[in-house]
Image (tube, rainbow, N blue to C red; front, side):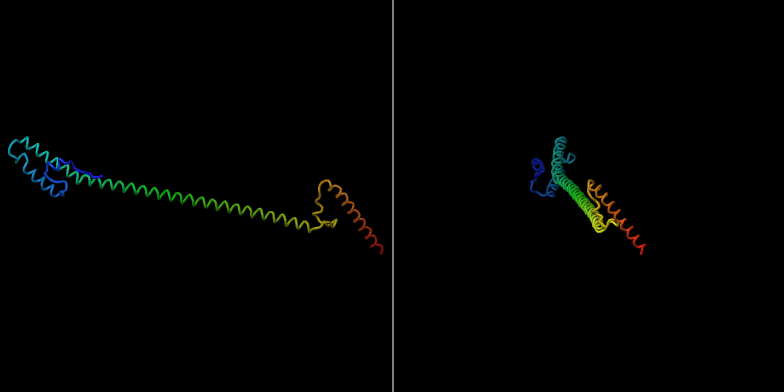
Length: 186
């Protein structure tokens, strides 16, 4: 946006908008000296009025030069501060997003590790149970000389099997008794 001083200020001072500020100041000093109420001849009220117009025009042009430059500088400084705050907020938001992503990765890794440990524990339990079952299959009942896993039968069959086993154990005991009596007679 182009800022322009009022045209009448240039006309009052008798300068062009293209003149530099040193020329404007030189012209203002000459006019102020000539139209000062203490120096001017004629009506003091008219001289005071003309002197006030010259000073007002110069003040407008000076504000135009200095004031807008100062306003521009303060606007630039404000925008720079705003950019800095925006950049800091963006940096903090990115840092927070990175922290949350890091925490999510850690939690996912912990869950995966816990799941792997749980699966390993369950696999170890299954392996121990399978080893126990294999050991039980290889062991034999000392009384009947039957594999011990064969002794675990369904409940209906179990009662009849137990009776047969007791009968077989009784036969074996009788066989031992007979052998022992035979051994005594010899």
